[in-house]
Length: 108
Image (cartoon, helix red, strand yellow):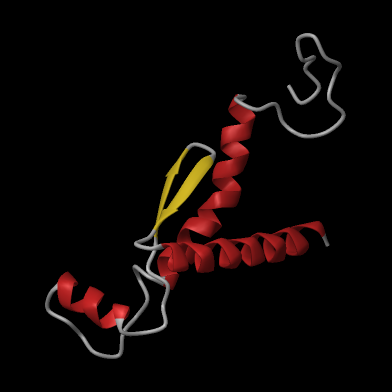
């Protein structure tokens, strides 16, 4: 499967074919850790005070330096939903650092 010939091209020497079954399975293995990490950064971040409603908790989190964001994933794609460009920019750089760190941990 990894060495399957691509139409009108040669046989790839590395990687997994895009759209293949193995591509989705491998990305789910890797992105599961990212899912949990992003949720811990906002959705499941513990607050010192207990709030009765989700709205009260959300309002309290907005007054902190946390980055509001929700990860949505389908197969091997993901998006982080946030309210404004400034927060999106912060998430972009945070995810880049996370991916670089993850890559360093898995290649050593």
